[in-house]
Image 1 (cartoon, rainbow, N blue to C red):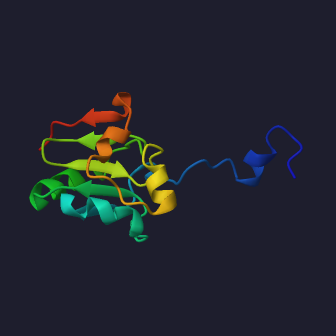
Image 2: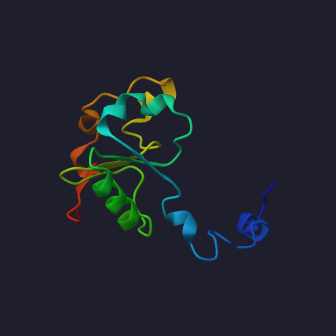
Length: 121
């Protein structure tokens, strides 16, 4: 048990992140066409980020751009042809907790301040 103000820091060696801070960056991206959106909650292999695009090259371009960015898992990132979201986003949690199919208009479940338009493709 921790009794002192800094006991938890001492127990962890005062380390809050990895040496290169890689835990702040996306770990995995799952690239899929938009047709697959409904099945995503049932796929237990998807644990981090989903890149939806019918244009695989644009999806890969977003993946390479975002892999070295610190991005917010609660935000939906959009371009004209790509949607990027995290499976742990609170806006979609009910679908992943119940294995419900994700609706094709899943972006409507995000509040407007949690949708970010990217201009990189």
